Length: 402
Ligand SMILES: *Cc1c(COP(=O)(O)O)cnc(C)c1O
Image (cartoon, rainbow, N blue to C red; front, side):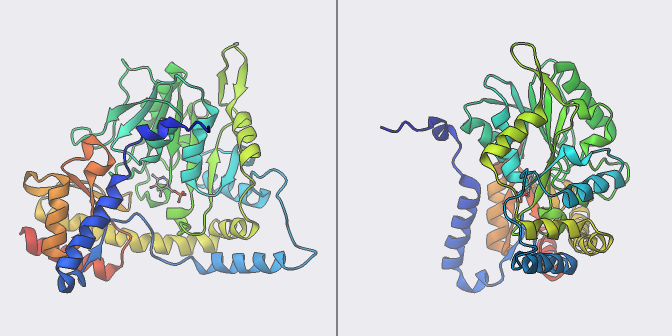
């Protein structure tokens, strides 16, 4: 008989988006006319199309694949072509982080690397995750048989949990700008985390998927803008939100050459080496046309075009945030993030507020409770819609709450 990985039974049910869909369906069936007015501000997916230079680069690469002389099969290393690693390295340089091409591995997106990275760590680690959080960090640890402890992100700390020196974590997951709360760590706060990690010989897994949304100069775009981070951090990033690659699939993970831990026999182990071994065994790289498309993202014209799309979402975030200001609703995010994380008015819990918006103004958001216990009483709206729908939804919200 095949024995199963029974850790799967310890996972929380994938309840959030199923429950949202169920409530929308029930409402739509009972109120078909009103349901035509539904505005969805819950989904964390982009809506703007790929930048034209990206499409051109992929088309050209596809044509190369159809010609014997320029056809490409397996990539030698599976770590990404030099042209793309060089482009990512230069991109890091542009915001003051020193990352060499050989410290970068190209991936098919941040979710897989966030989930798979746990393979290089043993059992018995104290794993620290901020609450609320993107569910992958917890789920991947549970699947591997690990338990997780939490650092509370709350209204009091601006949803930016800080280290508790009495807790000795071995692995720490941080995400800034944060999904779902839109909060960001400044340099001093990140330095505190880096110092804490160095003191405990811990490793930080830093999810920078939303770095391109940072507008304030003093907010670091990478953990490698912080002194000491190369000795304790892995950074995982993606073109999904930066360049609309959610359906195209490309990301990159940085493991610095200086990131070294001791094994149980006291030998130094380069984490980049064991991650390379893991990827070499289980991953064969990202398709050539996609890597050419990704390279185009980092060209001057690509940056200009991608920034136009980001500016489009940022205008939505501004509209949502200013509506909250007008209504006296507390929130985090919106400035350096496509998410606005708001406190449900009148002390409503997340799901009661969800139902109120759905049934009274036909606006769908995401109940904060779905991201962790500290999310209850909070609600996530996303800026990934159209200007028209976002403005309309905010007019309705004002009508409802004023
Ligand atoms: C969207 C998102 C990602 C990106 O995932 P991909 O697999 O690259 O599409 C990573 N982390 C967080 C927190 C996200 O919200």
